[in-house]
Length: 278
Picture 1 (cartoon, rainbow, N blue to C red):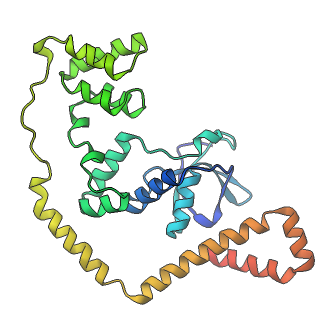
Picture 2: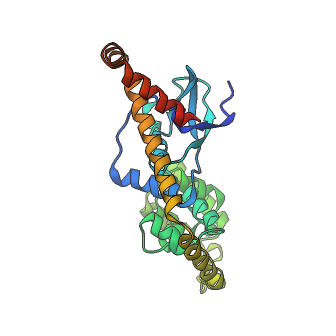
Picture 3: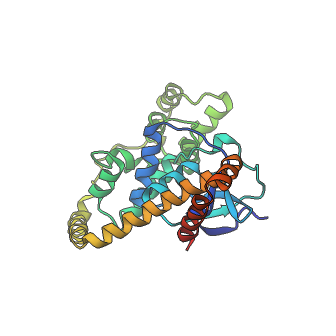
């Protein structure tokens, strides 16, 4: 089976292969990013007995359930055990987060995204000019976690080709510290350094667009009536109930007990699961 095959899977048919706890802060960040800009990274799944085991993306799955999402974009895994448990925690890399926010700004106002992420503004999260000032190799090292944000900022003091040379030196010495990068920057000839001119504010030209988007968001919120909210909540509650019912029925011992002593409850749970699939 090719791991690149993409498929939309009903959330009710997803089952975590393993359970792993993450901090509330980490989970809230995942929830906020999906709520703000959608699910960027698909879940990795493996088909089994008519359902799909989640090999990678359990926390994204939890967030989708909480948000009442019915269908999740997934990629088929080649093997059932293709991913180890440490892959079960979703971490959005700095470059991925930057691209997510920039893409969302095409449709949603900066203030709305910042509110969803639980921050006062996006200046820090966007690192507006940092990524644009980095050589592609340095960006890749930053995205992979080899160098820190503070270290990446040191690279911006020199031209891209010199950045690449410094990174190669750091790799050869296996030293990715900020102090080492700063030392290499200081040793850089003036001709290879970047001049520090005044940076223009990329938001200035979007002021009117931001105001228009805010107005559209306000108008859209006013159009949400009681019945649409009620239906949305009903869908979420049904999905949660179905997942809870299915977790009970997939427990062999518990199902046998219920079947023997409370067959009507088993039938009711199966009906709930069936309704959620439709």
